[in-house]
Image (tube, rainbow, N blue to C red; front, side):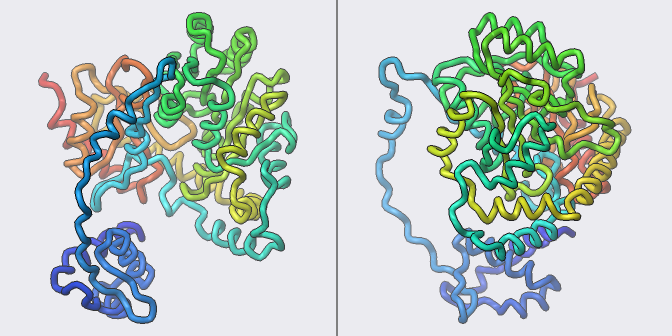
Length: 478
């Protein structure tokens, strides 16, 4: 059992026993709970923290943990006026919508006992927890670790990111930001005014669609295939929409896993340059290539001398969802626009986090971690692919990627992907329906399955077995 499921299980058991205690009555000590439930002190501490966050218990330092008093019911007011205020638009205002449903589908923690095949991050057993802890400890001892950092980021961290883009950028071209989502938001705010169209891959990352709509932009989908975006359709989209921004993931695209073909890379840059447009390159999983990936193509930014590409990359996917360190890189006047938006929205990324990132990527444990993850993700991908082929041959797998953490499955036309996802949850496995990945009507029903968030190979196989149970409930009659 993993630490997380142990915590969830203990919290559930304690939650069920709270009725034995009166409000303000003291619960058993942590030592008693350790002995009673045969778990570690850390598990007890974290389970109690869960109950405290739910308002069920209160921790009193030096005294213990007590059952909380029932919360007083707040007086009910009339909030119906907010519906008018939030939807009313001034004359000429740009309509915008804030819909995080697609993001929450991958960020939500499944209930205890449900296998997580819907996540977007490495399982804790694959995260470099010890290396990150050591890096944080070393960073905390650095002189000035808690001083205000440069607004652009620590020079040594900017230099490290610049080297990773293939030598085409210097540290002066790089801004340190707080996670890839923030970097993408900064880029779109800087490059496109409210109401403008922005070209996006179809399908694409739901978080990108959410950013665009929340900032008043109009996503215009451009179809991709197994070699990435189709250049002829990209050119058509620029002409038809007048867009000046195209956002893409050329390497192991989310959700298809496609890699932009060699013959298309130059075409994409040429088409964008002819349209007077920027390409925002979201290079989000370069550090999650599998051991069988071979030599990776360079970032698009490395082959762009004209400042067409604004490059986004992050440490988060290869480390932990809580290690939110990323970079924006650009050349020319656009860099000043990006810097201004970055300062207005963030000021800067916390210096201790940046110091820890410098320590982490400079430690011998870092390349070892990347090698371990590369081998493990390939093995997990193969386990899931085998299980799908053996147990669910009716679900088509058009492409098996050599990087990233998920598979993209096409369902038969008659299948309701949302009904299948709901049935899967009832069967004990969380999966992600494909509809949120499309900016317009999807061409077919899809599912995305992640193999990175499960604790081991046996759980991946069991998850596919549970999906087969759901499939039998939802599959169209022969």
